[in-house]
Image 1 (cartoon, rainbow, N blue to C red):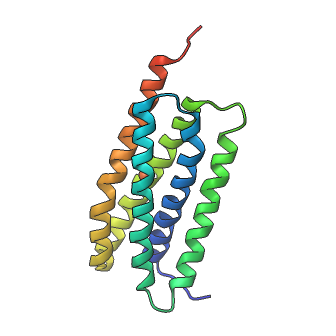
Image 2: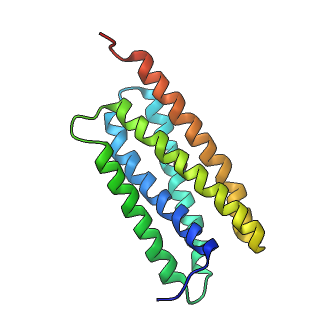
Length: 159
Ligand SMILES: [Fe+2]
């Protein structure tokens, strides 16, 4: 298999995380019993789809390495999905779901920041631009899942 660069490895990771985020939202959304939180998750899912699409277009321009990068993305998606299965069992509720989403979104923010730094150093202006688009969205996702958690916590039975 073709060797991929560090920047390409990070591009693969953010792609896999965007794919896993869609699966996480599909799993968590039915656990949520609050309209505003559900709406915010739905929007987040659409943005995760768009993120994956933009990442995939960037990967497709990488001649000879496309398959290797997509394989790496799939591996990341699988690892993130396994983490979700470990964290969210059959007895999990909506708040557990948003706690997991908080970790997942924080992971996305961290990975995009790293991709931004590496792209800048490698002179990969297209990936820098992609990061400029994606990072604020991921930061908003993190802020929204934290806010949603607190909304659910405020409704939680504390007895
Ligand atoms: Fe996200």
